Amino acid sequence: MKKTNILYWIAMAGVLFYIAYTKGWILAPFESISPKQAALLIEKDDNVSLLDVRTIPEYKSGHIRGAQLIPLGQLKNNLDRLKADKNKKIIVYCRSGSRSVAASRILEKHGYVPLNVKQGMIGLLGTDLEIVK
Image 1: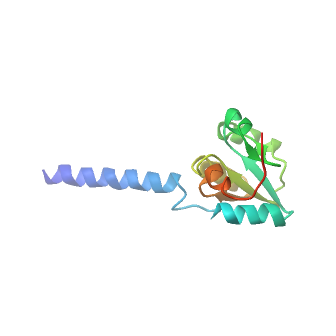
Image 2: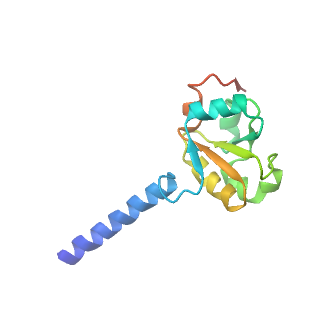
């Protein structure tokens, strides 16, 4: 019985660690910013690029003006398509903020400076940024 309990708690700890890691709550070597912070940077800083890592249909349903689309599943093999150089900060967003964490990890690993947007497009819709279709 005790061995089963120990294994259960080890498994639970592993699951919690995995969730925290994929959400960017722990071991994230990049910065996560709020939608409001992202909007301020987009409006005032010329040294930032926008990267949308959602799917093509999601992008076509509405995206931030000036955002480049590279879906998360294609990002690793298409880093050469990025319009940002490695000295520019890249504001990365998806629908809710989960895929952008994974994308930010990829970008950081390849020498870019990603800024992950917490809450993703859902949060960005609450700002004054222009949405285009």
